[in-house]
Length: 369
Image (cartoon, rainbow, N blue to C red; front, side):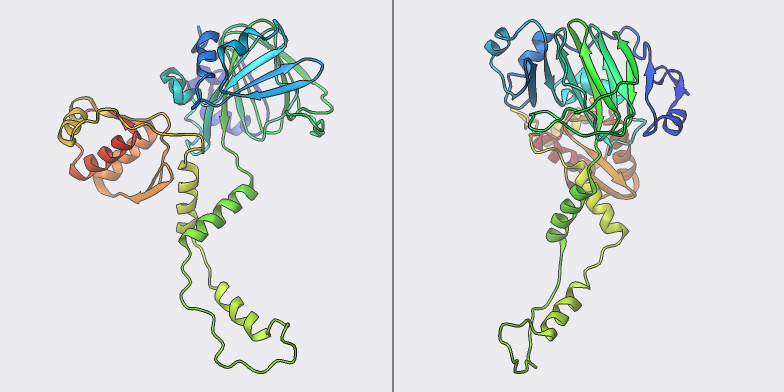
């Protein structure tokens, strides 16, 4: 099925011909789209402690400030050349979560968040590149994008932002409300506000293998079991007391070489890693939680849906939710797969064990009814 979001391409065609390969400009990708919030609402979000926000001002040089921001900060800003960014809009607006849902032709393990950028004329973050794929959706106003497939990705030193030292644009587009531009990783781009405008960015998780390696070692530390203790009952007299005995090194190597991991171990690590919320994400338990029986009745009559902050993934019978894992089979597995895919379940009876699991998640703020 073709998608207007992708310029009448099918998801299969997009993944084959564009994903990770080349840009795609789609005019009127979201017909009638003018945005999800106004600047005042965005500034209100940027004043909250739990919201990740940044303010970038370009004067004689670049400046970067991290929120939360007092309302008075915005009244002191010039009429040109600044931009405000708010991360994880999908965590704070239901409409943001709904917009992100339109991109689930990409696996959820790769989806990161929805960022919104508000800029006055001349505002932007400078020519840069991202290490991940990005969809740039224009809300209110207009933004001029200059893009380049250049190989030189050197950055200007001693700046608070990662700005390219040499930017040579190859193409230029002005995006209006509802237009969308897809860019693959490491594609240089520079977006400058033509007028007062807002741009919504769908980003993806693309950790470096160094990050994955460090996380895997932490995971290995938690899961590692090596029985026994170093011993040397046959210790021989050594000529040099400061020398590491060869027998000691051999014994240590023998035991450390017994550390092994298989596909199931890697799956367990990956599931926990990609479902683990970011450090700044916190869940809020219900103020007046329902009793378990009332919760079960509510689910039976209304269904349930995951919190926007919850990440639920699966592989086979293993399920991973917010960095924790468990196994489910039979009908429970079927329902949990549906919940992982669509993030909601319709009204119905789901069995005592599953209701017990959902109730624990509800009390933790991981899902709503």
